[in-house]
Image (cartoon, rainbow, N blue to C red; front, side, top):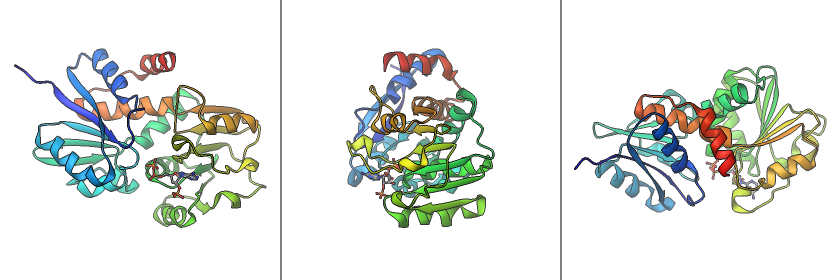
Length: 275
Ligand code: ATR
């Protein structure tokens, strides 16, 4: 009996994840046979669960909230972009070793630039949140040479740590939510907090939104997320949920594991229809 190559997504909570559906659609499209599981793992069990998955022949894992930063310590090798981010969302198990990569940055860039036609070069960008998701996207965004990138976070120290980490790569600054300057207008505001996900509604900086602002929520949902609803209420030019980033980052992970890059457009269309 041949056993299928095993993959999965590890997070806490993880029951909402659409990754199994996306990877099944990619597998069908590219004629690959594999299985992809949902693995709900608490932070205390992360190491044991990853090592058990590896020991039992698993080939690869997606890592999601809240494990993206912690899992770095378990990797024997890190890709340059995962190392720069200090966060990992894709593990590959090869030759008894754990390889960590981060496809979040390329995922959001592909969605913004290719799917949505947004110009990042010269843009003023505000990111809300300074956790693992933000770490993954700051480096790739800075490479596209925005005019400025500000990180606002509830805990200012975490935003400042990120600024220290990335300041050699471009114009990046930090502040708390209530200190986002009211006279600055942003072309792009990205919500990278996990607040909506937990049913919480932080005081997002309303003054930062103008009728030219595109608001992008890394979260996505069956209904509009609290941030995407808030952005619409503030009169943002467009308010978009992160379905595109989700599918794009998954396609990059699939490519790392299987050596073939699926066509994302039909899968994104199907995800939005079934959403
Ligand atoms: P992820 O990997 O998704 O980034 P994380 O590392 O746990 O997850 O980071 C969560 C982010 O959401 C953090 O920036 C967190 O702010 P703090 O650094 O102050 O903890 C932010 N966040 C979560 N809940 C929030 C809330 N209710 N209000 C504001 N920010 C919140």
